[in-house]
Amino acid sequence: MRRVIAVANQKGGVGKTTTVINLGASLAAMGYRVVVVDLDSQGALTASFGYNPYEVRPSTTEMMLDSNITLAGILRGGRERLDVAPASSELLSAEYRLLKQPDRTHRLRHAIEASKDDFDFVIIDTPPNLGLLTVNALVAAGELLIPVKTDYLAMRGVRPLLESVWLIRDKINPELDLLGVLPTMYPAGSDHATAVVEELRAVFKNRLFRTSIPVDEAAAIAPVARKAAMDFKPDSPVATAYRRLAEEVSDALR
Amino acid sequence: MLSDEMTNGGNPVEGTGSEMVPERGLPFRVDADRPAPATTLTPGELDELLAGGAADAPSDDLLPIERDGGMGAAFPILDEDLPAGGTTTMSGDAGAVASLPPELAAMLARGVAGGFEATMPESTVAMEPLSPETSPEMAALFLTDDRLNGLWGRMDAAQQAVRVSVPSLDLARKLLSEIETARNLLLQNRDNFEESERKVSGVELEVTIIQRSMTESRAATGLFLYELAWSTLLIFILGLGGFGINLPWLSDTLAYAISSAAWGGLGGIVAAISALWRHVSLEMDFSKSYWMWYIANPIMGIFLGVVMYLLMVAGLFSLTLSSPSDQITSPLIIYFIAFVVGFRQNVAWDLIKRVTNVMNLTEAEEKAG
Ligand SMILES: Nc1ncnc2c1ncn2[C@@H]1O[C@H](COP(=O)(O)OP(=O)(O)OP(=O)(O)O)[C@@H](O)[C@H]1O
Ligand SMILES: [Mg+2]
Image (cartoon, rainbow over all chains, first blue to last red; front, side, top):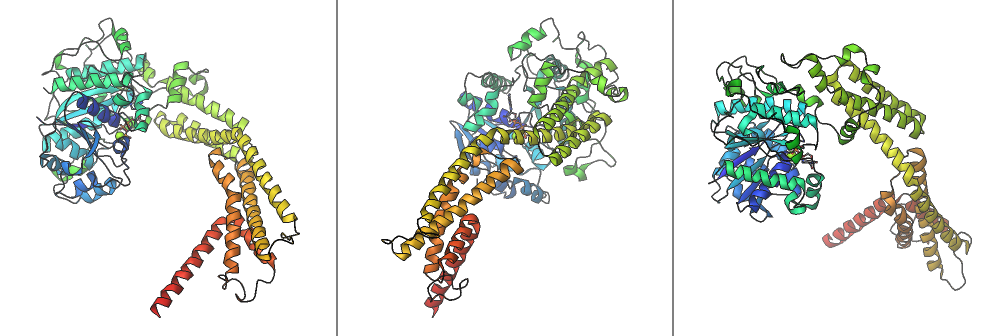
């Protein structure tokens, strides 16, 4: 079994990277073999595991540009049972160079498929736009996880993403399925956020995760310690929430 | 579009979820496959807030997935695959106003004193309904006058802070006009929220830097005293012999070296004091995180003074001094140069680099010859 999950939302700062790190770490803690892939030239995920996006090599940049490099070829250790495919700061220019390639939308898919290693989950962190790298993630993935910040305007931002998903399902990857929509940065006791979650539920029904991720400083601080929230502060609300999310994900994909 | 049946009692966001849905529906089936979600959510608060059956899912057919009736979409990366003439808005104005900074959220929670309506013309507060199902009153709840109020409050606060904390008239004028622009932007159109907020944040940042500089200038006083102590010591040493140490038991060479060191140190001190003055009084961006530079500068000056002396004695300055062979005519020149390199230390590093380059070159020539 190998599941490829793309975590995407073209809106910035909605918790994509935080979700990839902590969902990845929680699944690893449950005993799965996990790979997290950084496709964002900002390298937040990479940095969170202590690698320097300005130096790290080989990275997803090389993997995307050179079809001989597989995902397995660029992995680095992150945590027990969890490996990181780091991004380098050159990924942005790689995106432009990639635009001229005929198989530009399938590079990541091929790199994952060519890796013989046995992963249970490959979780892809995407940049906050709907460019070629995000498309690569959506083409490579069987499952899409959409983190949505629990406020009204952030919720509205989901539409452009869904429009692209339509296109990708139509033209390239009809298997792409919605793993779920994840409410993030849920402020305790906010009526507005509650209403937004309700609305998400009305639209996404069974595909809205039961778990919401609360606002919790631990999520923001953990990367400083180069750790997932799980390992940094296991009892924090955010760690608990991501553990529950991991259970939901593992149940859903069983 | 969601139907009218979706009512759950005065929920202000109700029905707006349809704004997430592309015209041809969701790209996924969302009502099948998995067990229905329990009504309990993490965090626990949601439990209580939802108590009362608000979470009952509406009937299945609200979002028919009509894959053929929709519009084509422009997606640059897939351009050639697209049906001709299709366009859609990928930009999504939604992003424009979205994320609230924590301060604003906090203000929102506190409730900002002073009504927004009182300060803004009626027409700018009103907004078009977000969807046919949404009544203007409900829409107004989203528009979150609260948020606008919050930003408005931040502008007031920033304005006040500029008045209180910014001593430079020019800068204060510039900052106040930034705030004014931010206000106008917001008044013109609520979609300008983000840009307006960015301007306000910019002003807040400037004010914060100035305020920090003010609180940290106590550290500046400490550093000033430190520089003063050094200068007293060095001047005392120099005073032992007019412009240069001149003790009977000291060899000339050593006396020159010590004096050069002292002059270099003085140069470093002057540089440090003038930097203190500039950052504390003039630009008001003093930050005590530079303390090490201030501490190190006199010491570096001393070292550079000695190095310069040695270089000159070694005759390596043939380019700058008339002739290397005759002993340096006046020690005053050495002292002057020592002072200058202490004061402008990067000039010194430059000189040292040039000298080493020259040496490398000569070595290479010797080898070749
Ligand atoms: N549950 C949370 N509680 C508090 N802060 C959070 C939470 N989740 C994320 N954050 C913080 O919010 C910021 C944005 O999160 P994150 O980097 O995960 O978003 P992103 O969608 O990956 O952003 P980008 O689009 O820029 O890549 C980060 O500073 C992160 O530490
Ligand atoms: Mg990110």
